[in-house]
Amino acid sequence: MTTAARPTKLTEAEIEQRAGDLKAWSVEAGKLHRAYRFPNFDEAFGFMSAVALEAKALDHHPEWSNVYDRVVIDLTTHDAGGLTKLDFILAARCEQLAADFGARS
Ligand SMILES: C[C@H](O)[C@H](O)[C@H]1CNC2=NC(N)=NC(=O)C2=N1
Image (cartoon, rainbow, N blue to C red; front, side, top):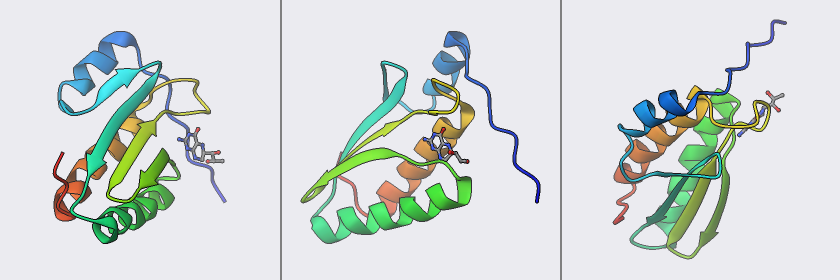
């Protein structure tokens, strides 16, 4: 079995460049941060289930919490001690899936 190479920590300039495509996300203390609100709990949890499948496929996992119709997500790469391209890939997928599940914000 081969092990996928882990991505390296991005520089400040690389983070700034990639963050330009994700206007709704903020960069806070080495993490990408975003709060979503959905029509109800079913949609919020449906979104989380879909993101969980992406996380499994990428072998890259969010820090997140859910209260009823709200989902708060922080993305960082623990192995690299900061942000890597995997965080931006997962954030972009979250944006697509959130739209599918009717996110309001
Ligand atoms: C062995 C396995 O690939 C690693 O532990 C992965 C799993 N998922 C991960 N997820 C996140 N967010 N950061 C990591 O460094 C990480 N490492």
